[in-house]
Image (cartoon, rainbow, N blue to C red; front, side, top):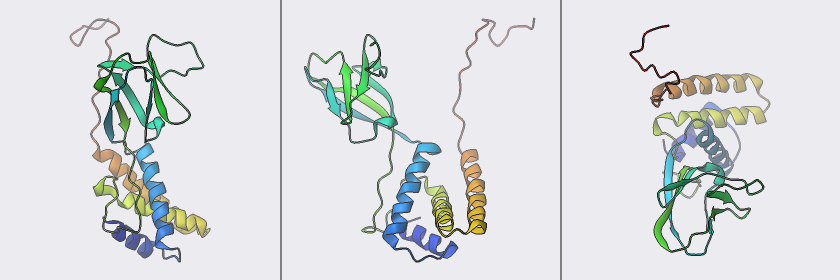
Length: 197
């Protein structure tokens, strides 16, 4: 669905007097929450290491960082208030990744940061764009915004209707995703062909 189609769907399901910009702001908020909870696509960003420079600014939320790999070595996260490890990364208050130890030489594409994606902000300047959220489930955004509008209007009956519609569609969304394979640790050493006790 395009942004205009989402705005139309919201108006059809819960007529309101709010401006399109106000509704688009709500859509952006809902999409960010969906990205943080049920929809977590991953991406990566590479950085050139600079000799004697421990700080690398990031333009995304540091909370979305999954892993930091420096020259093919994974660096764990460390809160600098506590005793340090042999190597680690930390986050500064001005949204920089700090590396310890400090790189000693320039390395092109020497650091890769794996992270969860963040959705692009939608605006009324382009109503033909589609949200970054899974295209097959844009109605989740519609139901969440409608629920929010019903809550603002203190319309408990419609709030419950939209909550029910949202919950049903979210269940379908979760069922549509394939479970990631999980390796089970064989703590007893018997393996799959081991006999019982």
